[in-house]
Length: 594
Image 1 (cartoon, one colour):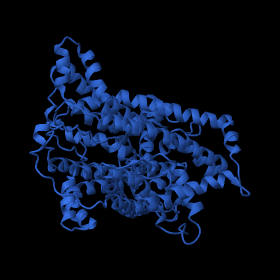
Image 2 (cartoon, one colour):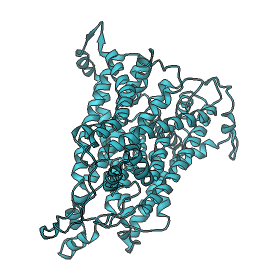
Image 3 (cartoon, one colour):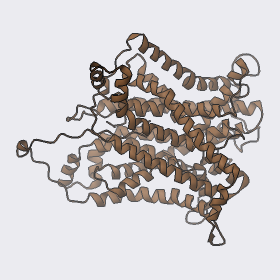
Image 4 (cartoon, helix red, strand yellow):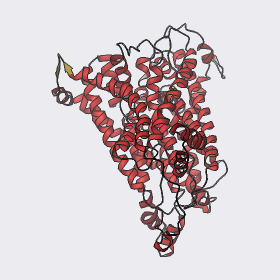
């Protein structure tokens, strides 16, 4: 998933003056209604985010910092003065930095292999690498619990347990974010012209010196963008830390959940929300700066021309090492999860835990746990429809390249739901949406609304590059011929972005299916979602509860994996179906980005 990427647009060479007078006449421009149309398209997304994101977050923050009509901002310093809160802040930052460094260290060789090597099964392996990123954090935590926890594979083989240790958290974060580095860095690496590095070597530079002086500067912004995205995801980590960290480790997100649901200290939770919001805003600002740095002229070639079969012992050894890393780090945890879900009290395997999902004898839910599958699918479909509507309108508004600061600021705001505490959003829904005309606490739509907030950024990031690749002169010609903006969109844009729309729908569906932080507050006991059901089962002792959690996690993982494989097929078709840029010979990649 290429959330952190942006299209790299080579600068068009300046036309010689003596040829300008012979230039073909351009299609007459349509009336200057672009700004009005853009503002109209932005109206619905702005209203949606204002009502269901900004308002709940502001309401829960005000509830914590305002008492008797007086704002108590001094509470911020009181909270920061607490040693346990400072420890949470330190651990949140430290583990995010450590996770980012470890992910880069492990994933950069994989990015090189996928960029420069051509080998059998490469496309399938690329899909396998991407599957962990779309898995719900609850599934990732459960998989590593089955591998590293009590009774896990390491415990059975060597008597080693890593659950409730920081290493379990770090390894789970690497598992989750490996694809971010491979997709972001490897995507650009595959399009860098290798002849530049070869020229440096012909001038006497060693292989490392040529890579350091030629390739690394070109990759620098992409590496920085990937690192910032990994840091953002790990800084706001919730499900992984809650399952693997136990009572010993707590990030800001976990502490906000504990303060709101267990201690009921809304003032402390509000302060932590403000701190996390400020940190996420700073990370997004730095990320936007790195994106602008990437929008420079690079000598790029078609990615299909740079990959070669491995040659020599060194390249084959590197390929083998990357394959071994993927097998151990990315394939083994889900495999152990499936194996644990098929365990039986006696020797052999069976479907006992799956059969137990159809009964509500445990009393943990008001319905059988298997009903969570249908609930999750219904919620995810509704959330996908909402995310497509809001995200498509936002992407259409942002597609013009002459967007001003206001529009660019709106683009950054769309990313905030990925970094702002989902726990705060979920609890804010309960606090803010409890009075007419927005008394939604008893309505089923509350869960899809929260899930759509997370899905919209994925829709925008998937559709925006493709919309920008559409030749604007086609829109202008249609407008000159009298077509309305809606008809221009239907007749010009939609046929070209239909496949990207399907990809965006798949991403929105996958992330909605696995949303946990907000849903854990607003999902009712008689309508639990799969991630909520898994977390509740893991929170209770007993072999049956543990086995049912493994079975539900396996079901959720299978649904997400199937969705991802369908997406990969669509992405491949999207790339082959898009025409090359006549100026550069480049085609958009699988998300439409150059």
